[in-house]
Amino acid sequence: MTEAAEALERRIDELRAAVRRAVAGGNAERAKALRVELRRVEREWDDALEAMAERVEQADKAAPVRPSAPLLPLREQVHQALVLLGAPAAPKLIIAVHEAFQAGEMVPARLTSLRRDEERSFRSAPYARPYYLCSALTSDLLSPARGLLAVSTWPMERRIIGPLSPRVDFLTAAIRLAEHVERIPNPSPAAVRLLWRFAANIPDAALRADAMTPVNVATAAKAELDIHADADRVHREAAAKRAKKQLDDVKQLFGTQLREAGAVAE
Image (cartoon, one colour):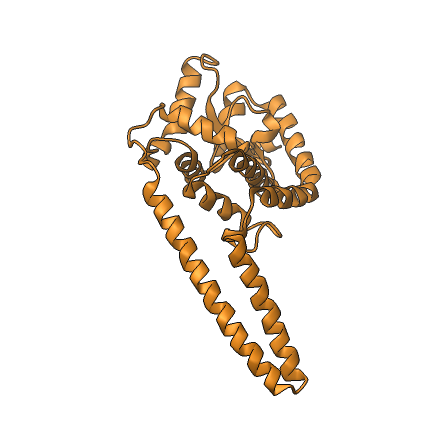
């Protein structure tokens, strides 16, 4: 929202407080005058909000149409999204990141078989590629964490999912995303919407989408991350040490099967 509209919001809050004080003090004449002023400022705020909505709509219409054909292979598109986030992620988030920052369409149906394709490729020619899209592993059973993709070149600890890891990874991704948006001169509406999805679930990150700033989102996410990071690191490091000791190269990337999990956990 524009600075003028934000100033009007502050003025509305001040007038409402003044009305309450006038009513509580029995000053009916002043309360009446303040209500007239309050309605006038509220109308100005409505006008400012409508003007902002029109500008956003015009910007969306003016935005260049992205080509529907992907410019990179699917695995490279997924790799780019995961590297940006810096943490294991589900296909839905990967697609949202791609749509916010990259050209070309990412087909959701193709993501379902991608991990299996990567595992087959690794089994047939281990380490033949610079990286593989692999599974995040649960800290207890070292089995594939349902629906989460990771990058093989990440440290094992980052690919482990412990009790606190979903929140830690959410905050890590929020920080990385906010820093990326901050570096873009004119982020797309899709990028701003994606950042708001994170900010709305982080205390003190932003009260409203139109008042959100990447710097505030990153600062709030870092503040909460400091609370959880050490405890999460203990779980992850312990599980990673166990995985390196008990699992072969394939299972370190793609996890154990459920029938094997009991033996691994012992």
